[in-house]
Image 1 (tube, rainbow, N blue to C red):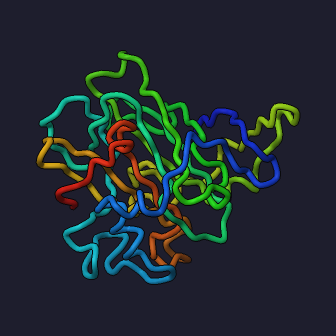
Image 2: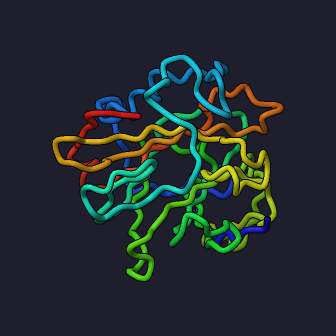
Length: 256
C-alpha cells in the first residue's frame, strides 16, 4: 500500500537529527512505572517469548500486550479501553530507548476510525532517524481540529532504514522527503505492508486509579522482518502522554 508522507525538516541533512520540543532526564524517565518497565526489562538480542503472537513468559506477562489497533485518544475521564490514552490538551511523544543498526523512521497520523486505512491518512515524520535522537527527546504535538471528535485515533508506523532513502528537497531549509512506497510496520499489524498481521509492537497501557484515567501508553517496536529479527522489541521504544501530565510527572498505579 502506498502512503502519503509529508516532507519534513531536519537539523542535519546528513544524520537526520530533528528538532525536539525538549528532553527528559534519565531520572524523570525511570520514575514512571510503565516507562521504567521497558527501560529496565527490554534486553538487546533477547527475545520476548511468544511474540509476535502473544507474550508467553518473562517479565512482560500481565504487564504488556501485543499491539492490535490504532491508539484511542480520549478526552473524557472514565472511558477505559485497551490501547487508549487520555490527552485533553497537547500530546507528547518521548524517546525512551532503542538500539538498532538501521536508520529507522517513525511516522504518525491522526485517524477518525479504527478502520481507516493507512493509505487514507496523511503521515507526519516524528523521528527521521531514531538513532540520532537522544534518550529523553520529546516532541509536543497539538491535536487536530474538532472534525475528528468524538472519535480520534493515533496511528504509528515504523519504516526500517528509511532515512537512507531520503531526498533533500531544499538544502537551505533542510527539507527532506522519503519515497511513499517503502515497507512499513503499522501499530495495527493488519495494516502493515510487510509482515501483515504479525505485531511489531509490544504495548504497555498505564492507568492512574487516583485520578481515573489512562495516563500513558508505551510502545516497544521491532524493526526487522520476523524471519530475520531477534524479537527483542528493543529497536524503538517511545512513550505517549499528555504534556501537562508529563510535566507534573503523574505516575501509573497499574500497567497491563
